[in-house]
Image (cartoon, rainbow, N blue to C red; front, side, top):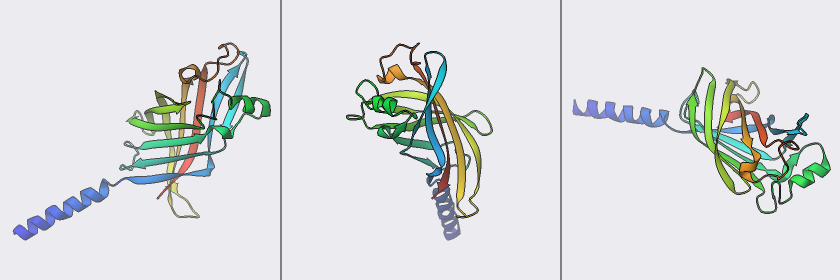
Length: 191
């Protein structure tokens, strides 16, 4: 009887351990983007895109309610569709990429607020300055890639930050908005 109980406890421990193991999801960059939008002269929006970035998700739950998101973007890869502006973004008063070539984000908390929506809290670092931000996260869908047969999940993240919190730019708000809208969307493949 003791062997039966011990076997049952051991079996349950193994099941609990296996189900609590973290799963890593890697970004499929071909089906993803990382962008930002600023308002110029209080009249028009200017979009920027980062061409070189990476992201991963780690989670132990199928509904992603304990997911940790990590994003890194190479700030020298920014494109606003204007060479002169892109060059200025590299300068000391903007991203200062000579000293701080990367933007990083690592989530520190996630709160499920709807069936497929979450509030994602995390540390955003730009120019060596780290601030806590809260972003909106939406699970766009899950499924199996018909070609690779791997599990996939799609997410969209949006939020607003104040560029002056990170020492980015000294132009007045009426020239270049202090409020920057961040947006990222992508497909992730389960390892």
